[in-house]
Image 1 (cartoon, helix red, strand yellow):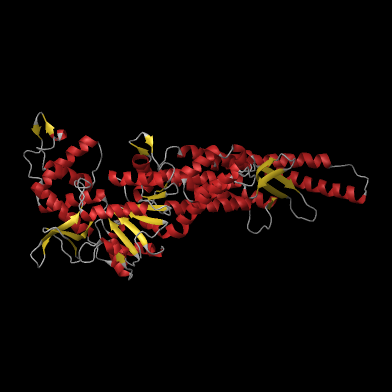
Image 2 (tube, rainbow, N blue to C red; image 1 turned 120 degrees about the vertical axis):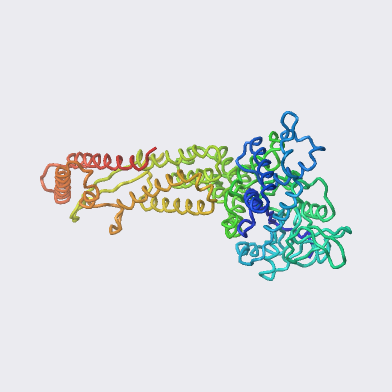
Length: 600
C-alpha cells in the first residue's frame, strides 16, 4: 500500500487527545511534577518554585505549562549565552543562590517519560471508534505516549510508525491499516551514541539505557526547547511525509484534537497547505478551540487574515466525548453543510429561485460551522425571510446562540436576545384567544393560538401548541447534547447562563403542557378545565361563568332563529360582544403568565 494513497480525512492528535488515557495535559503535567519534586528533593523544588513565581509575575498567567517550563529550564542552564533579562534585578541573577537547573531538567524528562507510558488496554478503549474510519488511516501525532500503538495492538490492527527494529521510513509504503507519524518522537524511540535509531517496547523508565552491543541509547523525543532548532533524520523525514499528505488535493478534513498550535513550523505548514488546497476544512476539537483559532490560526502575525480564515470548524468539547460522533454525525453534517453551500452559491449565480439559504443556514448550524452560518445570516438572509418561518427561526436562533455561548464567542448575548425576543413575539405579542360555544357540547371551549398574524394574501398564520411543544423538546435535547460534551471548567463558567436557558425552555414547555390537556383530542380546552387550571387567576369567576352561560344560550337561540325561521331577534351582536369580553379576560390572564415566564 503506497503511503501517499489519497485520503479525505486525516487525524492530528495533540496532548488533549491522550488525557483520557491518563496522560496529563500540559498544565497538569507541571502541577504533578511540582508535587512529585517536592517529595523527592526539596532543594530542587524550591528552585523550581522560584522559577515559576518569576514566570507567573512576568507573564501574568495563573499557571504555566510543561513545554514552557522545560524550555525555560534549558535556557537557564545557558544563561551566560542568553541574556534572560527577566531573571536579573539590578544586575544580579535572581536564582544565584538556588540549585543548578540541569538536574531538574533530567528529573523533568524522566517524569515526562514516566507519565507518557500507557500500558493498560482499558485506558485506550475511548479511542476505539478511530478504527471505524476507512483504512489505511493516517494519524499525525505530537505526543510521546503509546496510546495509538496500544490501541492497535489491543484490536489486532496493523500500524506503521517508520520503524521495524531500526528507523526505516520505507515501512510507511507497506500494506497497513494505520500510518502513525509521531512528529515529536516517542517513549519507545531511542537514538544510539553511534548515530542509529532504534525502537524498543521494553518498559524502560530511564531516559538512557544500554544495548547488549554496548551502545548507549537515549530517548528520541523532541523537547520544547529543542523543537525545530535542529531536525535530525527521523523528524525531517516525518515532517516531509506529513507535508506531502496534507498537500493532497483529495484531503477534505483535517481533524485536530487537543493541540494548541504552539509549534510555528507546523502552523506555517498548515497555512501553506490551506493556501494550495482550497477545499480543506480543519475540525479543531478542544475545550478552548475558538480561542486557539483566533490566536493561532486565523491571522498571520495577528494582522493579515490567513488562508484558514473561515475554514476552521471549532468543536469546543472533550475529545473522548465527541470522538464517537465524529464519523456518522459531525463529519456527515459538515459534508452536507459544505455541499449545501456550494449548491446555493451555484443556484444564486444561475438565478435559481429554488435555493434556500434558510436551509443552508440550518445545515451549517447542525455542523457547528459557525463562520459559514454567520456569513449566511449576515449576507444571504433578510429579516423578512425569518418572519416567514418563525417555527424554524426559533431553532435557528437558539442554535446560533448556544453554539456561540459554548465557544465563549463574543456576541453570544446578541443571539440570545434575538432568540428571547422571538419567544416574546410568538407567545406574548402574537397570542390569540378564541372562545366558542358549540351546539351539543356541555361546555364552551377556549383555544389559545400563538404567533397569530395576518399574511400578505389576506389570510393568517400561526403555530400550534403541539408544534411548539415539539420545538421546545428539540431545543432541550440540543442543549443537553452540547453541554454534555463540554469540559467541567467550561460548564462551571457557563453554568448560570445554561441553567437560565434550560429553565426558560422547561417553563414554556410546562406551560404548553398545562393548556394542552392530554385527554383532549384537539387544542381546545373546556371552560371548566380552564377555570380549574387558572383557579386563582380569574378574579371574578362567577361573573365569568355567567357570561359563558349567556353566550351558550345566545348561540343556541341564534341557531334556532337561522335554521328554523323562528321570529326571534338576532343575537349576533350580543354573541360577538360577550365573546370579545371573555377573550380579552383570558388573553390578559395568559399574557401575564407568559410575561412571568419569558422575562429578562
